[in-house]
Image 1: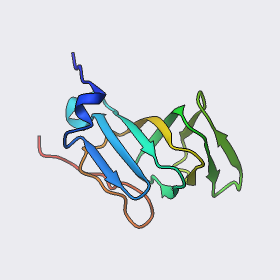
Image 2 (image 1 turned 135 degrees about the vertical axis):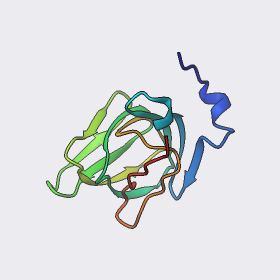
Image 3 (image 1 turned 30 degrees about the vertical axis):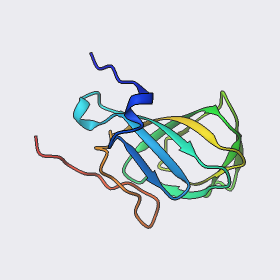
Length: 130
């Protein structure tokens, strides 16, 4: 069994900060679950262009308000508490935060915790030695 406390982990190297967001990675690849689980804060006013080419992601909004724009379909969807979106086609998108948003995120395949976004807004696949 794996038990972690967000309030403890947010003060460790499991927290990653970047432009417009910070993320606490509660489950990572080396936990062996087949996915990773993160609590991510999107800062008010952030506009994040992303394209996860190597990962699928599902995101549940815990708090805050914003929108996600699907760059391939041209549609925009409001995000508020209770809304989930799934990037099931490696969708190119822009995430915008009108207010600070707290998001629960699941990545498959799982991230290792060492990834950073590349110029396209994607995480590379990182293979760790077993």
